[in-house]
Image (cartoon, rainbow, N blue to C red):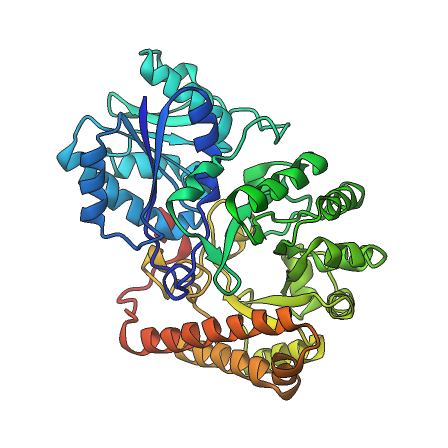
Length: 484
């Protein structure tokens, strides 16, 4: 079959402000199995060029595939765009098969199919194994009820088949890296870059995060094969930067050490950036030199909150002491630390923001990223806030960079200004500027300059958008009512 993979344009700040983009790993991951099954597969990365919806439809008409597959890593905030594209395609090509997938569709399949009959099929869960069986069924007129892991409309009735089994062997399916030839994907100061996954899932039950629910259990790639794949990306495609999409790649110390050792043996000058838990950094104090030798330049640490009570409520299972130790250990090994901090878990008062700033100054990370808690329906956290009202009615802005939940004591404009103030103080404090200008590692100085440059653009854009583009809620709507 002739298949077109579409990465929809995303209006989130992270997609539009930087001039750099990373490849859509999810679509590349299903592209590999489809190509290997003998299908003619093409990627249209509309997010890369922020393609207008009408031009996307024009390219679909020009290519005239048998099926269009859509998905995006920011699946909650981009779902409205996917629905618009589906509607426009069906206007021109009413018989076109439109299939979508991702985290949001996996959990909102019934709502999507009931509201939008132009979406034909939803893939629920890991798509690599499901998609080849689904396309085979469509091609051979086999009943879709025979395909596990999908939802679809039949005779005006929404049907969901049995769940598909999770992929135990992550090396079973390959990523279609050949799509890299079509666009110049870059990151980390305009260096050619890709997104990869060493593992899937997370063994920790943080209540606000749905990763452990979507992926079901933590699994990992073969560390030796994975290291060789990264080496191949450098030699064959000129990739310089590897961005790990993993929720928690360092979960198993023994396996992670095997990967680091194998990558060092490949002797490729790659720059690695990713995310991990602070307690894993503290645990790995004796092998952090391998992190650095393998190429790690920055690790994102989910600090989330300063209040031990809040951390316990959201089942974060971390401590302020461990967070501080992790940042110090990374600095000792010349690895940048980025601390993500989330506001909105509770009805904060002014003193809570003061304490947050105070604790962040104590942590002393190299970079920070302040986010707003976002109430996804499939997370356990949802049940604790489902009756709260929302202040952001546009689902396209449910991207962690816009306040969604109302707070009892502070108006949205006060919350916004407090967040922006904390960001400014953290990034222009003397010790931070000193590292920016005089860090002993030239490569890290360049990386910090790149981050400051993007951060400045984002900060100004957020301020402008909040003042001139923000739409206020006309009526009070609860989180539960919003999703229903």
